[in-house]
Amino acid sequence: MMKRIAVLLFFSAPASAQPTAAVVGWKFDHAPGITTHAGVITGWPASLGPVPTEDQISVWRVEYNLAMEEQSAEEAIDLDPRETARALEDLVAVLIEERAISRAKIPPLIIERVNRRRARRGRAPL
Image (cartoon, rainbow, N blue to C red; front, side):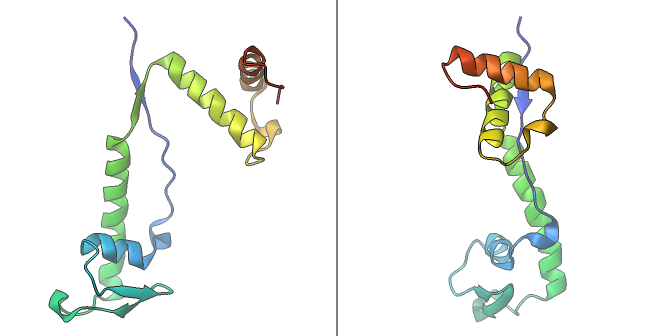
């Protein structure tokens, strides 16, 4: 019986980095009439009540981040261990090819495995 594992690749920004437009839009279901510029609310429909304070928006940023993390966890891909290894090897190859990470930072065993897979596919080694 093959064990199943879940793989979750989630990159999150600090709570303070979430744009005001994204946070307020999420909180008010992207109600028409809400506008922002450079992180400042510039338009607010009277039907939504008073314009939110920075303190309220800070609290909503935390709620927003938690909601996004939950959503990402629900969307996690269920892979068997061999599929997971292949997916991670492919990710390493792309990161190196795109120069997003230095080859020197990858353990030699991983580089060897990636290069073996690339050779089977007729591709040049990293």
